Image (tube, rainbow, N blue to C red; front, side, top):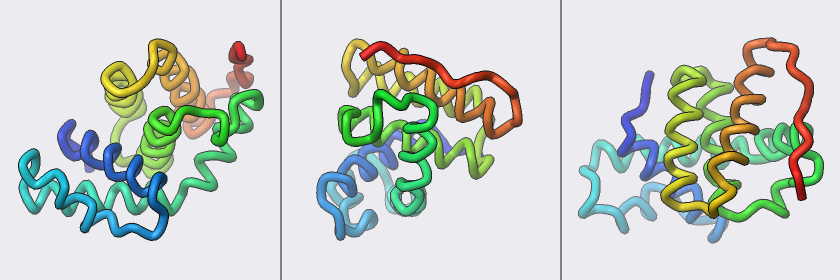
Length: 143
């Protein structure tokens, strides 16, 4: 199942909120976006964000392996949410790696820092290659 850009964007925003306020319910949080999305899209985004949030420990560990100098606790919250969402989508084969990476980079351009798009692109590209058994070595990211 390929996600629409709007559902992915809302899922990112919900995942960011879930990280900021653990114990919250994604569907309840999605009500904040009632002007931007209909009930069906809010429900799909909430389910996607909840699944990605549930897999955050696996995603964080994967990022730590790929970029040991940038573990989750050192990443900006926006980057962390985008990486978790992208990791979940790639590893569950919900969309092709190229689509996931492109959409994640677009989110990083809109919400992240100047360095976010390149950081997100590099890490998710490695996640995709690892998921598809491409033997590319881990990258060294500048501090």
